[in-house]
Image (cartoon, rainbow, N blue to C red; front, side, top):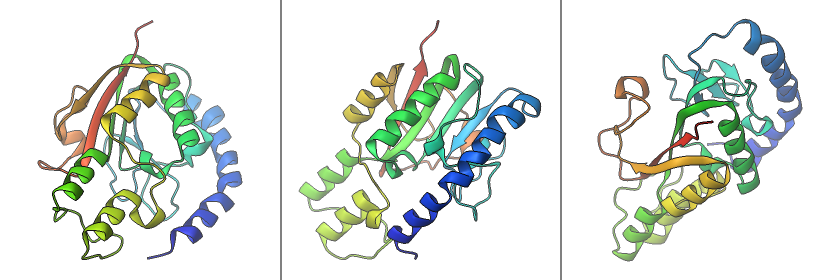
Length: 216
């Protein structure tokens, strides 16, 4: 696996050409070629979802829009029907995430919602205290020790820039202007059917949260 330091160099090198692409998407593509409903999938990675607009900065992943989301969202105000972000927000620094959440709030239609899934710090902390992190995967690095598994889950070998419990995510979403913030279970959603997002039945590793743009 490529070291995260080199990945960061590549993404930062592509930030400027991606900015040019952002303006192309904003002023040409969004106005001429896209029609509602616009359902966005942010940072899709290898999880391409049919029916959603899959956005990804990695040039090697399948996607609908090549976009570094640190540049913002190339959509008009109040034009997006829903937003989905699974295993993405933890890869942003606090300032980057705050700016993106404000962008999400801007582009969503009043009353429309966003669903976020991030690694659950509270679950990992509880597992560390009771000496049971057996559910932590060996990605991206194998550790046998309790501390190593905790590190693997929270920091992901440097890929994760933030970690979340519900209170922190709720605070950040409130600051971005969202309301009706609630914790959800996998496949429990007021926004999507499971046929749309295909979540696992049991997923103890992730915190699922939904929020909504306030009505005008």
